[in-house]
Image 1 (cartoon, rainbow, N blue to C red):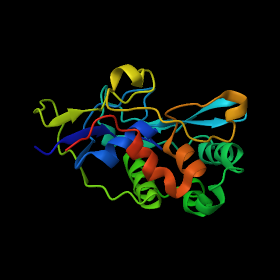
Image 2 (tube, helix red, strand yellow; image 1 turned 90 degrees about the vertical axis):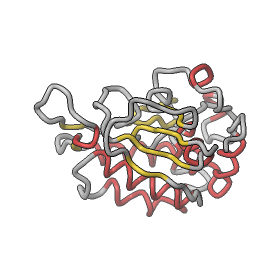
Image 3 (cartoon, helix red, strand yellow; image 1 turned 60 degrees about the vertical axis):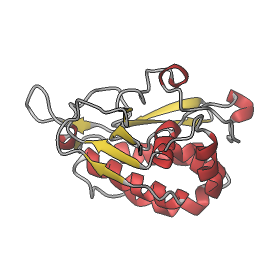
Length: 217
């Protein structure tokens, strides 16, 4: 029986998230969940000279008490694009593959093309999958998914920055790879996918395969 993974929308999602995209025959991205603060929906984690750095996109919510993720807009206040891009350059400018991918990512931080967070996340995800050479089959929900069959696995809140992935996700195994600040901080697992991409380049897809504990069909 072919399995399907359900995921939340995520900004430069962690390696754990991309492992699901790489290993499940079908993935579904949830757009009708209620927006929750302090999740990967609008934040990611990278590693720089000072250790782990959190990048958060400021958002604007509708005036209603609860709102769908699909309706969350990117705030025009502040200079977050400039700050995020500078942080990414500072963290990864000396990695083996940053110069090869810099021009692909730069446009996302130098214009205001995207109004909605979901659209911004989706565009980045499509770019990353292309760069990793990850051919995935995914769709989006048309309403909030509540009931799941045995072949449907709900990772929407399992992949969460406040949850210990080694306990919450038995399919994900940490396979260390070279990180540019590793001698200073040691290996830091499950950072944003760009940490893997800028350090390992074309080999990233093989790392995602190695991080899968059990074969998924």
